[in-house]
Length: 578
Ligand code: FES
Image 1 (tube, protein in one colour):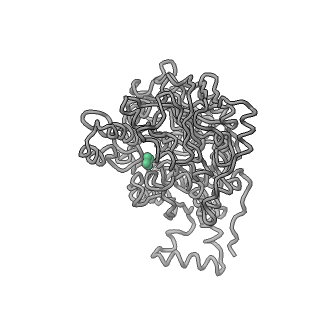
Image 2 (cartoon, rainbow, N blue to C red):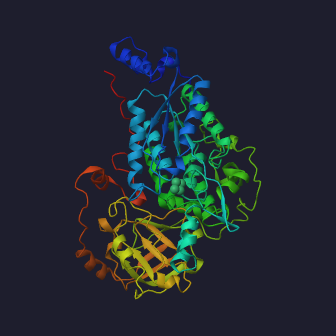
């Protein structure tokens, strides 16, 4: 059982260092709050709660978060707290280039330092688009004050010509059909207005819903928060409830270090694999663990994935969307199906255990949420590969791959960079067949930099015309959680730092054995050694700025791609108020 702690007193809260003293500094702090038009009694002797908001005009998934911040504020006021809204880096997944992953750690740093540098006792974190969830939580775990995550909620379902369509997943499907002329230009332009029907995060089990589900299972959200559609009236009520609950959490001193434990971390892994979630989670989970001073390896995740099958019938592996998942009972219903695999006595932000939170959960639609005895997909959500091509690991999502490629041997066709790939992939005379293994180098954390979601390499047009829709693809990049295909991603170490991927040449033979969890380049050790002698690292692209900091401190995919100086839970001193 978790440890009970005495309730905090107002004098013991960190905000009081700024606000309660009879000195010139506190005078100035109180004066500046009154400059906002506040009365003294509106902020004195109350917990100060930050609403960290990742709203922006270029983050459509979060376009309703200003209104939700107002609801959070209402809940905080009703519970006797003093709300302050702090804007943070928005990270709209689709707009930010080269990739939001380049900035996940920046958002983590910003969240941590926003909370540290201001008079804040607790925080409600408003996010949901892919990197915002791990980014904000990494920062909050490092800061370790009471924090609750409020997911933006998925966008509404959409249908197109009678067919259920999912954000991201169908964009890719329709693009392939457009490339080969099965969709007209007019229809393609018309499709721009479809598949993203309302504000909210992608309605498939992409990275956004994977991560919000994981953090719910790990105890960072109110029960059932993940699947509430962004435009449902329950969503502003959830926001208000988050506001009310965080005030209580401050009095209870319920901070991440009290409930983010090895047990809750494994609950997160179990949830990820049962959902058939995005491969991105394999990176974010390791990074989150690192912030909490916990360890998690790829092999440990593979072991969980071998035990728990995919039971959620959700795009991209299935044919349902997040709204269907919500009506089926949402995450609590899924967790109830995998109850024996969970640490039910793990504490959560509700102040209760996970087991108590899901005690009354019911699966209301067994076609959306299956059971462990009647899984949805034959393949696991995650398989971790090792071999001479990826000594530190690579991952594949078997449930979104073609079973015919689970054991595959093929000739490599190598692209040295994304630019090289884009220049050649659709050439009519490209030497490629369905059995070719497409290899993309220099798309990893250092090489790109930022490890973009380029791992779902396009199928060459000449093969699309022949009806081919999947091939084995290998890269040190990531893959969008909304996508599907036999893509081996996160190869570590990456090519740009001299990983074996850098040594592959077109025409080499590569062997994938999913059952054995191996990925090998079929050349001799001598040949390997000779090629290694000739390795030349790509020229560094950035001499200054954030990208330089990034490439100098980023860890590889198997270590969570956090900055080396941010890992661990060594205490950081509180700021001086002098
Ligand atoms: Fe924001 Fe998919 S683009 S969640």
